[in-house]
Amino acid sequence: MAVEESLDKIIDYRNLHDMVRATVERCPDKVAYRWILNDNGTTDAVTWAEHFEKVKRASKSLMKLGVGKEDKVGIISYTCYPWVLSDMAACFIGAVTVGIYHTSITDDIKYILKHSESKIVFVEKREHLHKLLEMKDSIPNVRKVVLFNGERREDDGDWVLTFDDFLKLGDDLEDELFYKKVEAVAPDDLAAIVYTSGTTGIPKGAMLTHDNMIFSSQSVAACAEVEDTDETFLFLPLAHIFARLTVYLNLLYATSTTFCRSMETIVDDLKIARPHWFASVPRVFEKVHTRVLSTAEAKGGVVLKLFNWALKSGEKVSDHIVAKEPVPPLLKMQYNLAMKLVFAKLHKALGGRVRFCVSGAAPLSPEISKFFHSAGILICEGYGMTENMSFTNVNRLDRFKFGSVGLPGVGITLKIAEDGEIVCRGRNVMRGYYKMEEETAQAIDANGWLHSGDLGVIDEDGFLTITGRKKELIITSSGKNISPSRIEGLLSTSKYINQAFVLGDRRNYLTALITLDTDNLMDFASNRGITFKDPGELNHHQEVIDLIQGEVDKVNRELARFETIKKFTLVPEFTVENELITPTLKLKKNRIQERFKESIDAMYKGA
Image (cartoon, rainbow, N blue to C red; front, side, top):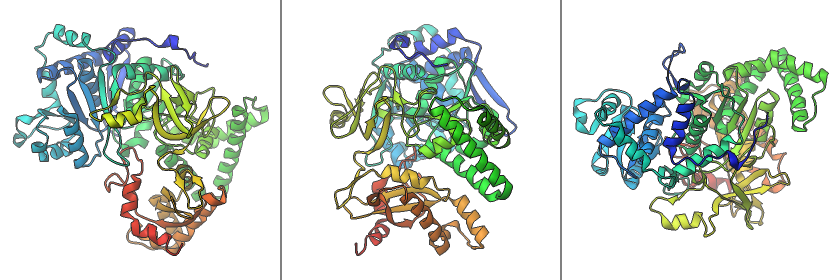
C-alpha cells in the first residue's frame, strides 16, 4: 500500500524530547531497542517507557557534571544502545552531540575534540580511552571521560568514570530541574555537530538543529512503507548522520531496533535480529552479491545451471514489475520455484523476513540493484549529504528506477544549477559549518540553496540520477569530461576487484589503481595451483594480472572509447588504518595519489 506523501503529515515538535515523548506515550510497553549478548542469540532490550527513563537519568547525570545548553558532548564508539542513550540525553537538555568514528586515528580525534570544545566524552572501550589518556594534556576542555564498557583503573584518576557510575550521578536531582532544561530547547537550537569525513582536507563540522532532525525524519517517514510490527537492524556507524536519521525514523514508527555487535558479526547478527528492513551502504550489498556469484560458480555443474536459470527467471519478473505489468502465470510459477530452490538461501542469510533495504552514502551499481530485485528484495537507493541530514531523495517501494536515487522527499526542493550541480533547499539544510563562516558561505548561497558538489540530472518523472562529483570530474587532455565514479562502480562489480580509483585528469587516457578481493583471489590462486606466503604477493603474479585485465576489458566494452581504462596497477587495499579511506569508506584520493605517485607516473611514462 502506497504511503500518503504530504506536508500535512509533518508535526512541528518543539524539540527532540517532544518527538520521543510522543512515541513513548503512544506505545510505552513496546520494545524500543534490543542488543545481542552472545553467539547463542541471547538478547536484552528496553521498552520505550524504560528507554525514556534511562535517557532522563543520563540527562540529569550530565547536568550534575555541569553540562548545559550548547555544551558539546563527544561520543567515540561503534553503534550500540549506550550511544543512542547518551546522544538523546545530551540533546534533551540542549547540549550538542559530537560523534566521532570509533576507527578514527588519534590526530583526527584530537582535532575534533579541540575544535568542538567537547566537555564530556563517552568512549566505547579501553582502546579508545587509551588514546584520550595519551592526549589528555592536549584536550584541556574535556572534563570527564565516561567508559561504556569495562572498569576504571586506579591510574585513570578522577578523569574517568564507568557508565554505571556516571548514571548514578544525577539520581538526587529533581525531575523538575530536568524538565526546566527541556523546555528551554527550541527548534533552531543545535542538536549535533557532525564532522565530514575529510576526503580532501580538514574535517568540517556541520551544525544540525533539532528542527533539522525532526523535519528530516518525518520527511523520510512520509516516503516509507513501514509497518507497526516491523523490526530493523542497525550496524551503520552512528557518527554518520545516515545512521542517526535511521534512528529517528524508527523512533517515529516505534520500530524495534536491534544493534549489531560489530562489523565482523553482521552475518551472524542478521540471522539473530531477523529484520523486516535495514539501511546499509553499497559495500555490504556488493560483498553479498560477490559472495553469492562466487559460491554458485565454485560449485559449478547442476548448481550453477540452476542458479543461472533462477536468476534469469527473476530478471524477467523484475522487468514486469518495473514496467508495472502483471507477471504471466507460467513465469510466476517458475519464479516461485526459483525462490524456493535458490533465492530462499539469500533471504535466510538476511534473517528470512527482509521486505526491502535502503542504500545510501555512496553510489550503488544498477547491476546490483537489479540482482537483488530479481531475488525478491528491493533496495531503495537514496541520496543526501551530511549537510542536509543525509537526505534529499529516495526511491519508493512503488516508484523506483534502478540507477537513480529516487524522488525528492516531502518539503524538500531540488534543482540542477547551470553547471550541472545539484542544489537543494529545505528544513533539512544545516545551519552552517562550526567556526567556519567562509566555508559556510561557499556551501549555502544567499538564497538558501545548499550546493552539494555533486553533478546530476533530473528526468521527466522527477527521478534524480547522480552523474559524478563536480570537483572529481576528469577532464582529459583532449577536453572530454568524464565522471570517474561511474567507471569505478562498474569495476567494483567484479568479484575479484575490491576497490578502484580511476585517474586521468589533464592526461590523454584513463588509468586505474585497483585493489583485489582477497577471498576470491585466494580461491582463484588455489584452483590454479599458484603458491604464495602472503596474499599481497598475488598483486605481482602474471596470471592474476591477466585475470584483472580480463575484468577491466569487460568493463571497457560498456564504455565509450574515451572512457576506457588503458592501464592499471594492482596496489594494497585502501583502509582506514593506512589513512587512504574515510570511516565512511570514501577514497581519500589526494592522499592515494601521493602514496602511489611512482606507480601512477609509470602508467603515463612515454604518453
